[in-house]
Length: 318
Ligand code: CP
Image (cartoon, rainbow, N blue to C red; front, side, top):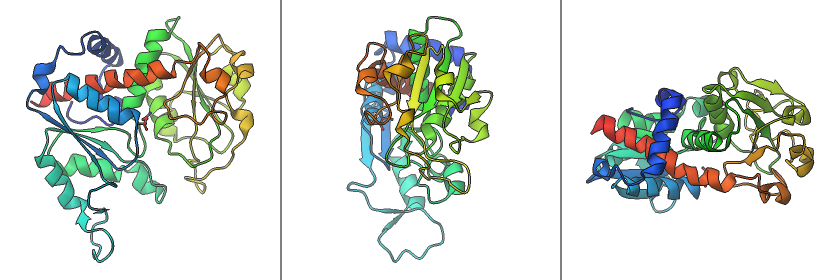
């Protein structure tokens, strides 16, 4: 693997699950791979889990780790080519990325959708420039349209908790006060479609995701119907994808909040969310604090997914 930006880079999904299991059981077995190698983590956006888990994954692999928050202490970056740089951005990304590449062996990038241009977001302008210009392997720590390290951790978690070979997994939209990107639901859908699970997406009308990510999933607009007999409920908010409402909030309808009444419709389902989560908007206190909530275990598996991915990158490129 040279770069990791989606499920398509991970290869066979069953083999990816086995590799993750090995990493989880043997966290320090591959320290020789990372010796004298530097992991550079670039954040254009905030993070708790991705920052800590990826840093820990790098250390588990014996790497040196550098973390840079672009918006805290670095020069403000111009990203458009051809502009006269007489504004408040003193450095162009076209120089900054190759320079960053000289200081490291592997680069992780977090760059969310900005909702200024659907075309720019869905063309992944920022992470693709890192791939093109850094000269180093690049992995996504959440880009504009996907969050593959999260989805890989979600898959590992479902594999650990599933009680049947082919569980019913339901991705449900839930309300949120701010407009959030589609990266997590897009990516989750893409990874679920790579399995043989029964996969259902439920959301209010107007929140349809890009068909490319929906794939073979069943789309059900009746949330209660979707929850029936589910083994896993994966909640997430996202802003509208379809034109002319791209990036907009169409509803904050709290009748979509995941609560105990809806969870009672399921097959004693586990509750999942990538975190951070807005309590009593996305999910009630009762559900997230219940024994069926596996959000902490899910977050813990972010170390495993990051380590499995960086390990493959190190193996294949050094
Ligand atoms: N789930 C996730 O990516 O969390 P952070 O935004 O805190 O990194």
